[in-house]
Image 1 (spheres, rainbow, N blue to C red):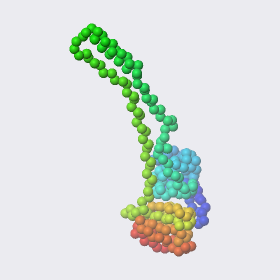
Image 2 (cartoon, rainbow, N blue to C red):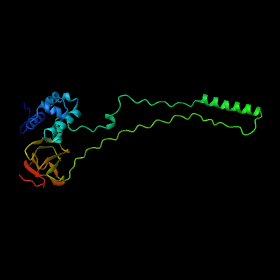
Image 3 (cartoon, rainbow, N blue to C red):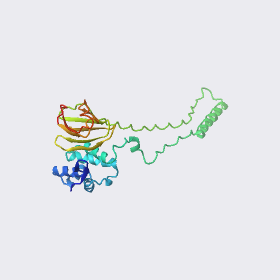
Image 4 (spheres, rainbow, N blue to C red):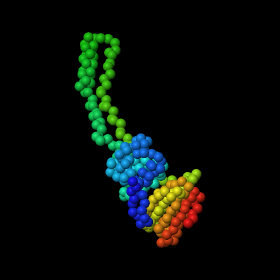
Amino acid sequence: MENEESTGQGSRKSLGATLAEARQAAGLTVEQLSVRSRVRDTLIKAIERDEFSLCGGDFYARGHIRNLSKLVGLDAEAMVHEFDELHGGVPLPVRAAAVFQAERPLKIRQRRSPNWAMAMAVALAVIVVFGVVKTMGGAGDVPTAEVHSASPASPPASIVKAPEPKKRAASLGARGGDTVVFQVRAERSSRLDVRDAKGRRLFSGTLKAGKTSVWKAKTGVRVTFGDGGAVSLLVNGKNLGAPGRPGQSLKRFYGVATASRR
């Protein structure tokens, strides 16, 4: 069953329907995909119905979408990007120390105070022995005993926080081979439709002013701009500027050589 979402340019498949169609095209049943992905078949069926509540939160939903997309031959990052667009954008980064913080604080053993009673008893015994020897007139050197006071326990080692995960920077340079890295920055809000060379949709919607998005695709990308003067482009590390004039609606193809055409 295919779920469809209504847009200003017609209808398009939902994220779940796209995953289901790609799974079927790959010749996989839900049970077979469950074995390969280690995701429960009931959860896969829910995701293909665009029901993400069973995932336990957006953080886990993104992980399942990325995993399933790779196994059925879809662009995992593009699918996660679409999920973010439909659910309020990319979340703020989470500190690793917060994710892996223990549920209960560690109890550090208290330092033991020196055993002064034992030290005093040893010192008193030495004094008594010394007095007895002197009284008996013993000759020669009197052996001495060293008295060591109990040293405080060494302070516990400081707890080292796990380093913050490095933010994954999108590579904007030429990757070589046949991969095209396509970056768009919206100078003002503008409608975009981005597809790969085979026509598979990577994004369709409004890119808000000041926002930058990046897509990667094999061979090239096909883009429909609602306002050619509202955005600036960077393709395989090459700054192409605005694709058209303000208010101009146009279509472009960007290949490995960053050449464009209608």
